[in-house]
Length: 186
Image (cartoon, rainbow, N blue to C red):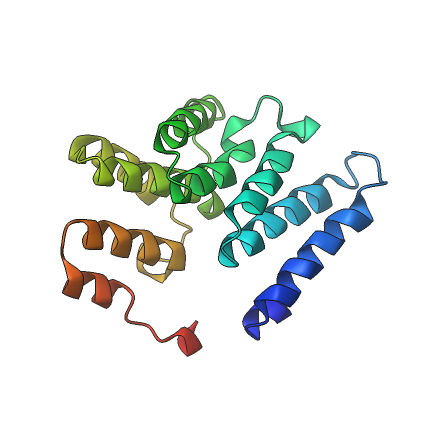
């Protein structure tokens, strides 16, 4: 996190990968579960930020393979949905998003802001495909998952995905406004 905040992306990727290597010999257990989840998702997120979609996918798939996510697709696939969207694997994005949605429904629709990635990515694909009705349904899930006290407008990924949709629609000025915050402000 410190390396990311300092703009040291290559170092952050290396640190995230090193963390997964340090965890590799440990058994999956209640004591290590959070570390495995966090290390894989951080490695995936750092790889995404670095533009390495293949590595981001590999780490997201490692996350999906964690034994404690066998029946929790909304937790397991939330990162992979974004990776497939950015890689242009849109059919797979929507398939994974449906797994996310049905699992999230079965789990009682828990509100957790970090789960917004999957429905936001699905909504973006729907917008790219011109299916506004489907986009609206996914955006309703995005709105349901908003972290209390933290409005959607403060979610940087949301700003990026909204800007992509606006650019797709030819609304350049609106896209610039969606991304108006200077990088230093992040």
